[in-house]
Each structure stands twice: as C-alpha cells, then as structure tokens.
Amino acid sequence: MYPKVLRHPGPTPIPKKVELAMAQDMISHRTEEFVKLYQETTHRVKPIFGTKQDILLLPSGGTAALEAAVVNTVSPGEEVVVITVGAFGDYFVSICEKNGLKVHKLAKNWGEACTTEDLIDFLKQLPNVKAVFATYNETSTGIINPIKELAEVVRNHSDALIIVDGVSCIGGAPAEMDEWGIDILVTGSQKAMMLPPGLALLAVSERAWKVIKNNRTSAYYLNLLSYREWAEKGMTPNTPAISLIRGLSAVCDLIEEEGGFSKTIERHEVMKNMVREAMKALSIELLASDEFASPTITAIHSPEGVDLAAFLGHLKNKYHLDFAGGLGHLQGKIFRFGHMGYCFPSDILQAVSLIEAGLKDFSYQFEHGAGVKAAQNVFLSSLK
Image 1 (cartoon, rainbow, N blue to C red):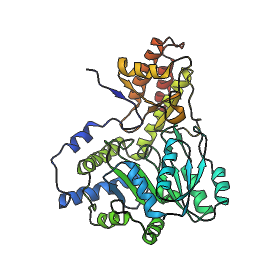
Image 2: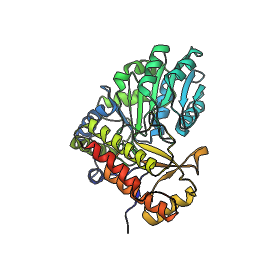
Image 3: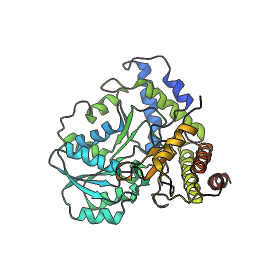
Image 4: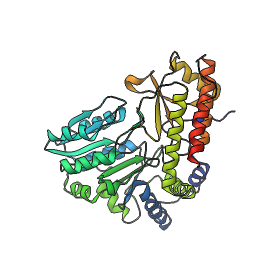
C-alpha cells in the first residue's frame, strides 16, 4: 500500500522520533519524573515563542487555549476588537460573542492582511477596548498578518491587551513575543509543532497576568491562574497529555538537530517560495500576495478549466496526495497546500511533481516539468 502524502494545514505528518517518544511506558503526572519532563520541555519551547515567560500546556486543542485567553482577560459586557482576515478570525469573533463580550469586528477581505493603518483608524473610534484579538497566520487563506507591527499599534494607541492566535504558524514562523509586546500567544500541537492533536501551548505576559488577577472569571478547567500556580511546581492542575509532552520534548530535539529554531524558520521560508514559484510556473493563481504570504500554508486557486473537487479527489485516489479544500465562500475555488512542521524541500518537490501528473491527467495545458524546475531552482539557490 502506498503511503499517504499528507499536505494538509493540520494535522500534519509526525516524525518517527516523536512517535517513538510518545510510545514510551506511561508515568504518573504527580511524580518527580514528570516534573523533570515538564520543566525541561517547557523551558526548551520558550525560544519558539520568543519569550522568557512560562509556557503553559493545556490538554486540549488550540480552541480551548483561545477561549482561555478570552475568559481570563475580559468580562462579559466589555469591549474588544477582533481582527479577522478569514475563517479563523471569524472563529475568534464567535468565541468572544459566546462569552458575552461586545465585539468590534475589523474585517478584511479574505486574501488580504490587516495593515497598521487599518488598525490605527479602527482603534481611534474605540477608547474603551480591553483587548485586541488577532490571528497571526490565517489558515483559511494562507495570509500572515504583520503581527509585530499590529502589536506595536495596539500598545501605542490603546491600553488594550494584544492576544494572538498563532495556531497555524508557531513552530514555523518568527515569533518574538516579549520583544513585540504580545500579551498572550497561543498555538496547538498538530501543525508546525509536529505533534498529533491534543496539546495547546500558550504564554502570558506580566502585563496580562495583572489583568487576569483582577478579572473575575467563572472558568474552572481553563483558569490560567491555576495553570500558572501548578506550573511553578512543574505540574498541571488537571491530568496532562503526558505522551504528547514526551513528543514535544522530541520535537525540541529535532529543532536542535536542525541547527536551532532560526534554521527551522529558514526551511519554512524556502518551502513557501518553492510552492509559490512552482504554481506561478504552472500559471496557477495564488490567493495571497508575496508580501503577506504564509510560510506554513499556501492557498492556491483552482487551475483554469479544471473541476477542483474532481482534481483533488483524483490526486488523493491515484497519487495518494492529500490537500485541504477551501473554507466558507472559497470552498470549491481554492485548495490549501500545507508546508509546515515535518516537511522538507524534498517533500515539496514530490508534491509538485504529483500535481503536474494530475494536471496532465486533466488535460491542463502547461510545460511539463516547469513547476518542478521552478521549485528546484528556489531550493538550489537556498543552498548557496
């Protein structure tokens, strides 16, 4: 049986070293062995977030950590801004509204990023905003927001916290939480972090901790003060995802073996450019501009004259190449090529080659090998 070539934006492939780490015998989460694992692993993750703050681990998907960021910092009836550039920005809107917040939605067209000018103009009208929620990398569109600059705007033009969803890019994109002034940064295990689903990671600034202490929340399972208190003892308040934390330790090993996190970031940039140049060479339109293109996922328009649903099904059934389709109003119009985590330039060359094989099957007119050549040129240039 042929192995599946999984090029989704999450879940993503799992390295063998991580699988083996997770397959170890179970231990109790109330032992010295676990305390050592927890403390060492969370310390090693800090450079990925760009922070000196504690990394908190929740046995959940990223959504729970996003909700934790909401319910611990803002009370029902208070005003917040949510920057949305796609489906997962709208997701943040829903979380805030469900928890009784007054939401001011700064919405951009899908395929566009939020600019500093957009945010400055928006905040000028809203003097009572308690928090600004932003998506760093929008999974539905392959857009990466200029989060460093947006965080600076929030700090300079309001007293609000800046809370960032980094679920689909942390581990594959630059993140300097402390330097950029981000107050809460959240990610999940199943994307660039090279793990199965089920573990959420977040870090909280000192400024945000002061707000959290003064905020009345009804949260029990998602009470971040409780997680902080237990983290000081090298534990979690509830049963943790022990196997996933062991896997996270192995992920840190792999990043160190690559030469450090800066090398991991470079690899993701190379793969992004390989995909983009390959599609351009095949005359297939991209959704995002080069300026705001994600290093972890590329949204690609349907090749002209090709039935996209049939094409994606054909790639999966004949070539075992699995992409994600579009979301919302982009369903049937784009597909999403994930290139994050346990993914390398050789994987991009394989996927582009198989795309070309599928295009040939659908009688799409192109120069055979043009996409592979363009991707290969990007890769070879990166080695100089």
